[in-house]
Length: 253
Ligand code: ADP
Ligand code: MG
Ligand code: MG
Image (cartoon, rainbow, N blue to C red; front, side):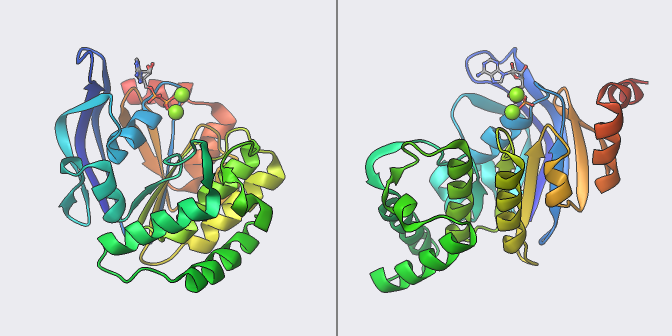
């Protein structure tokens, strides 16, 4: 599904600031991979580079989504190809109702895939069913996008966007940050409901607790722009017990 090879990225304004320094990983269809790492290790930069956000330059390496060159596409093309980033639309959009925004996004996505647009009735039926699962009420669907939403409401809304867009490759960057346990469980349930043989996830998190609820197939530890260790879910527990320091020392030895 997603193949990243020897990815190097630096700041666009200052190529001396190298952030990703030879990162490689391959995610197969249906797999959930987690990336954990200390603050500043390059986790968010990886998601920004994959989404095509301004500010970073790829100096070496490649990233492909189902064999198509991601780095060659603009952000809209990446979305149309099936990539979704959970922080992609956390912005507040005053004056635009959440439902209207989602209908536009869903239909743009369908058009890009060569599918027919959903009618108003079809869309309404779909969004009501998915919103119910995420305990998003009708009022939240009508309010302007993210305006005055609590942290938990914003995260649930991100998962709703994901559920509506039906992407192939979902990247969640620190989706758990600032959530209480109940909100985190709701978000995790939403993600788990979307797990499917044809859909893959990259879950980026600083802490292990989210991975109790979204159990990954593979865990990678990122340090200073490189993956220093890859393992199963037990690797996340090792980090929880011992922190990152031992793993970083081990990698340097
Ligand atoms: P993480 O998400 O793992 O905490 P980031 O990807 O946010 O790490 O940052 C990795 C490193 O790159 C940090 O040292 C950070 O200070 C630096 N960095 C990232 N973006 C910028 C930027 N726009 N300007 C300056 N430094 C940046
Ligand atoms: Mg950080
Ligand atoms: Mg980050």
